[in-house]
Amino acid sequence: MEQPDTVSKEEYNDTHIALLQFLISVQCIDKTDLLVVYKQLHRASQLHALKQARASLEDGDFDAEELHSETSRQEDRDSNEQDDSEITLGELSLVISKINSQLKPLYLTVVESVDQDDDTRTHVILVNTKSSDSIKLTTSYTDKEIEIINKLIDEMFENPIRNGQLQYSIERYVAINIVKAQLGSLSEANDFLNKLVSSLWIELYNGKFTLGTRALVELKQFLYSKYEEKSKLTPNGTISKCAGCGEITTRGLSCSDRNCYVRFHKKCIELFATGHQTTICPNEECEVPLKSMEVFY
Ligand SMILES: [Zn+2]
Ligand SMILES: [Zn+2]
Image (cartoon, rainbow, N blue to C red; front, top):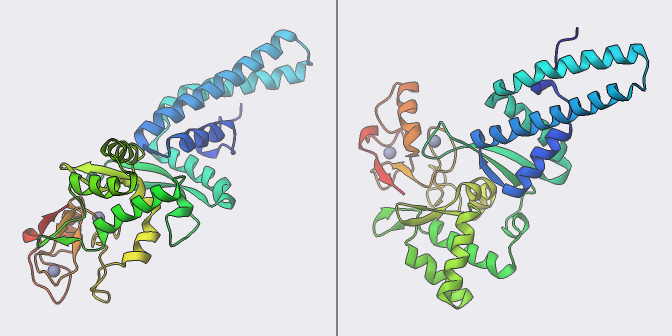
């Protein structure tokens, strides 16, 4: 008997399409939750195939050779069914890359992004890859709503040193006022902010609004081109990049030397210290100990 195919070797099939349709509807999901969905889809497609095979067998409308091969395929499916509880997150990544190979011509891609705070958590996000300097192309919002989103992002990133502290989050009332100025009423402003939260464009962190997981991934290029990374060569940039993982960080630890550009995610600093065998800030013009970095959000 042939060895049953593993999930990772499967060709692009109905299960991939169903998973993509699911991703289009949710846009952003925890990878462990997506694995549960994938297992259900995988199992459903196998049961469907099995039912079809059994129906054909009962019809008895094919010859002995076909019967034999159909039965062995059925056995393959049976053993695959037992496998599906063992589908791993790693195999799900292979499924995602198979989906991505089909998405390329559509300027869409499914991105896996590790959570800013918790490196055991990965978000899976469907994003637009058409590089652009505006948000317009990447969302389905109206022009007016995009203008509001732009204003909120400006408030967060244009001048992130507020009241003498680095902060990318904005007070609730500030956000409400920005939205209210455009939409008119307080209830409309609250509804719109709730909509942005539920679609993961913004999120509440310690009672303040900050850019959401999905926006950080989808708007990465936009943010870098509009505000520029803060670095040794570009000290006026306002985007903080983690010295550990290289991703944008909107909360974490910042060097206590005001002139220093070094920032870390909280989850990344320890790994950096052990990996580089160091206890001081990686900026060679700075000697601040890593342990006296300051919390920002
Ligand atoms: Zn990091
Ligand atoms: Zn420093």
